[in-house]
Structures are given as C-alpha cells and as structure tokens.
Length: 206
Image (cartoon, rainbow, N blue to C red; front, side):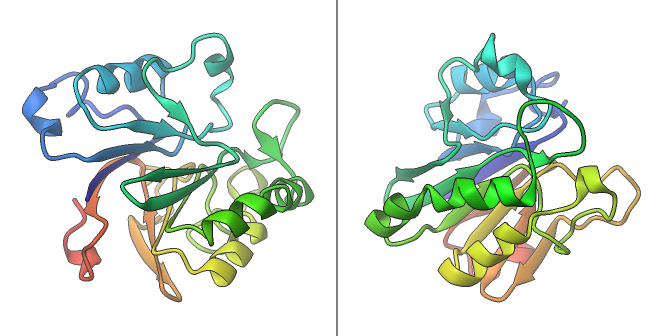
C-alpha cells in the first residue's frame, strides 16, 4: 500500500502545480494536521483514495469548515484494507486554546481508548500531530513531544509512527526519517510518500 503523508505546509507540487497523475498510485492519504481544510478537500476531490486526518494545534477552523470528503481519525482506530491506524491529534499545551494538551491530558485520552485497542489488538500506524518526547521533537514547550506516545510505541510496536508539527524548514536539523525500536518514524512535513510493505524504508521515502 502506497501512502501519502502530509502536514503543516501545503505542497505547491500538489496544489499549485497539480496534475491528477500525481495521485494515481496513492492508496491512502494521511494528514498529520495544521493544513487548510480546503487543501484536504481539494485532494479528496481528485483521488479515490481515502483522506484521513488528525487535528493540529492550529486547526480550530475545522470546527466551522471541516474538510469535505475526509475522515477525522482523532481518538479512533481507522481500519483500511486490514491496516489499523490510530489517530491522536494536537500538541503540547503552551497557551489557552483548542487541540492542545498537557502530558496528563494525553495520557487520559489514550486511557479512554483501552477497549478499542483491546478489540483491534493494537494498531499498525500511529498518526499524531506532535512528535514523541525526545524523538525528533523540539526542546521548547510548544514543540516538545509527548512521553505518552513513547509508551504507546513501546507497548504496541506499530510499524509506523507519523507526525508533523516540527517543520523541517525550522533549521533545527529535524529529520524526515528515524527509527525507534521496531517502529519507523516519519515526519510528514509538507509531503512524503512511502510504501507500508517496504522493509528497506529509508531508501524509498520521497
């Protein structure tokens, strides 16, 4: 399965210079947040692939203008072609506002998913907006990752962990790809494509 992961910044390659052929081989589109709802709606219009998303900390406009033709997977396990995808949007709380959480808040959110996790016997892809703690995150509070995500990865060992929030353009040497234990970690900033079945992943992300 070929997956297009996107986050944080709309891709001119896909939006301003769009050609339908660019999405022909994509089986699933996953947004890790902080993208214009009209951008997600645009992509959904030109592909038969499902478009799923979690909220970023700047996605309050989704409440009034939800992305049409797309599926929110926040606090859910979305199953597509047998692949189990867990969504947990939002960032570390650094000021009053929606889609921001303390570490304790995030642990509570995960705790409420216990039955879904039990019923689905875990998950294959973890989709978040914020990174995991000390795994390609920032040291400032707004970009600090969640320790709760590290615990999830260690317990359920998903094949992939997709996140956004830390822009690769920040100049902090944030990486596109990393690996933690058995889990491939991908920063979805702007766009990247990967194959779920690829065991030599790092060489094939684009």
